[in-house]
Length: 209
Image (tube, rainbow, N blue to C red; front, side, top):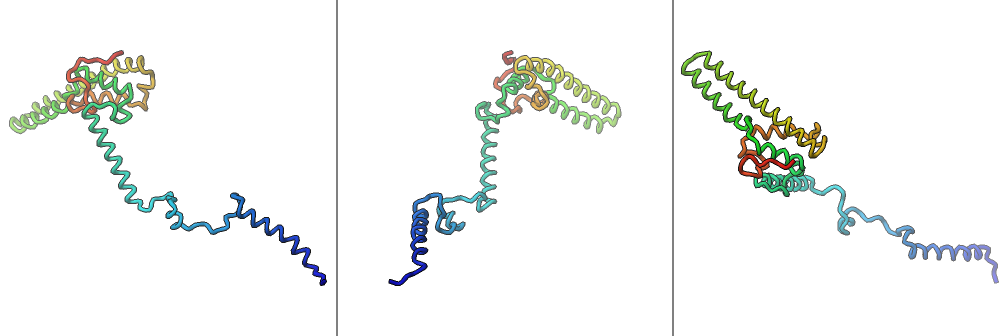
């Protein structure tokens, strides 16, 4: 029998190699034993990339969805459908502001037609009579009406602000709430043109305190 000095070393390494192969087959946390799949293979397996393949088409679809939502909200404001209006229009103090403004007679409601009428009359009188006093009178009427609108809006806001604070707290009249601009911009609009649509057809339906 021939003595082989490497035999013991090979016999010692054999169990180690066999156990390593067994770990590869049984251990789920062990090495993969295969190359990482390529992009095409990953997509074929149902893995979606983070960036869409067609950015233009994706942006166009997002704009279409946004436009559809805005159209639905605009239609809801025209019909007075509170449940489908924008979130900002569903705030309780904004509902109160709308009801309060719609319940009163606002001098500024007729500002646009009155200003337009004064402008037309001023142009006609100036062209016919060519008198400087006629233009001055029309201008005085215009500014007088504007001052009356400002005073009316100021008186309205004083009462409305106190009611909002008592009912909803200081947050309802804070600078970020834009309640003042919301109230006066609605007060100078004609009733039939207001959005959201007034809940009542006639004035006098005051909101509950």
